[in-house]
Length: 133
Length: 103
Image 1 (cartoon, chains in turn red, orange):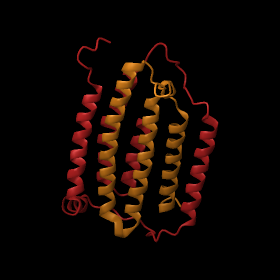
Image 2 (image 1 turned 45 degrees about the horizontal axis):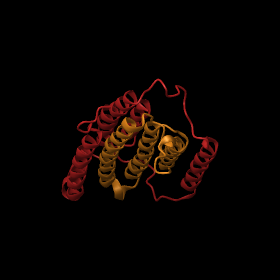
Image 3 (image 1 turned 90 degrees about the vertical axis):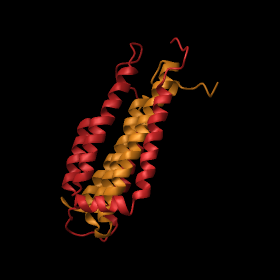
Image 4 (image 1 turned 120 degrees about the vertical axis):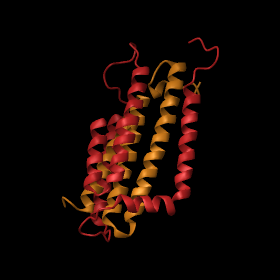
C-alpha cells in the first residue's frame, strides 16, 4: 500500500501537480500508513487466521471488479474529453491564489471537519472509565 | 497514449476497480479501510489528470484534490478509531463476525 501511495505521488509530479504530490507524501505515506500500521498491530491476535481471509463471495467480487475496470476503460476510450493534447504545468502560486481567495470557505470547513474527526477519533478510541478489559 | 488523458483515466479506473475488489472481498475491517483509501486515491488521480489536461479546470483541480485528501484523512481517523473500539469489545477484526444486530 505504501509503495502504491509513493508511486501515485510520482504520477502527480508527472501530471503536473507538485503541491498535490507533496501533500500525498506527507499525508498518506507519513500519516495514514502509520495509522494503519498501528491499527494492524493493535488488532493482531493469535486466534486470528494468519493467511489472507476472503469473503465467501470473493469470486463474484473479482468478476464485478474486472467488469468495472472494463466499463471504465471503454467509456474513457469512447468519450471525447475536449482535452489538450499536451499537459500543462500548474504553478503552486496559482493554486495558493485560488485556494485562499475563491475556495476560502470550503478550506475553513475542511479544517473544522478535520478537527471534529480528530476529536471524534480520540473519543471513540478512548477507554471508558472503569473498563477493566 | 503514453502521455494522454486516457492513460491517466484508465490507470485511475484500474486502481478504483482494485480497491472495490478489496472492499468487497476482504473480511478484515482494516483491509476494507485500506481499500477505501485506494479508491479515494484513484478518484484523486482522475481529478488531477483532468486538471492537468483540461485548461479551464487547471488551478481548481489541485484545490479539489487537496480537499479530498483532507477528507480522506478524516475518514481514516474515524474509521480506524471505530475499528479499534469494536475490536476491544468483540476481540476480532473480521467484519462478518460483527452480527450482534442480527440476534
